[in-house]
Length: 243
Image 1 (tube, one colour):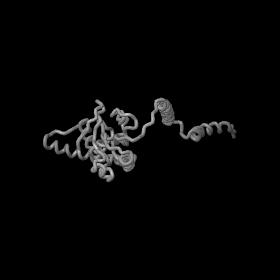
Image 2 (cartoon, one colour):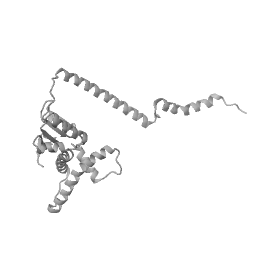
Image 3 (cartoon, helix red, strand yellow):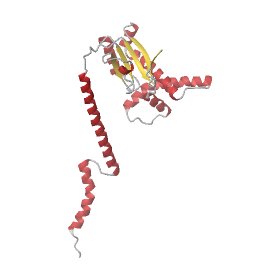
């Protein structure tokens, strides 16, 4: 009988084990997809490092021109988290002039309400502005969700946020049905989004009054003034709106 050289047995075994060894060493099998993911991860890591360098450099410039503020802001703002709507820039005010709380879709939760209560009571902030903006992505997503509800939410936090935006979408939708029946016309596109943005601003104001008896009492006692506004991204104009 012919004897098989042990070397010819070890070589195939080594070749079969090599991917597993690579998996154990790197945490993934180096398939084309995995290699692409690794490349993408490295690109993201590089971008993160560059952002951190930018933040550190920016802070050094800030320190060079820093002057201490007393932090007694007279203005409270509830605004969308959209990066295109920085309240200090929108109203051309310096740091320390505005006490800001921000959330996607300019909604409020308990933590934000507590923050506003603190500003009103302890900082003596006397004007509270709920600031929405045109082209709001949060509103667009809420519209899309109402038209085509997803079977399951990837994030319960996102679902909670949508639940707070949905009433404004529903209110405008019902109004549009009435308008369509009476005139044969209804809002679409950007005009529809802007109508819901305004309705959502008013909805947030109502939420503030309903969920914070303290702020509602301060408003009825004329200690604070609550107003709604919409920032127009295309022109930079702030439109104050009536309830």
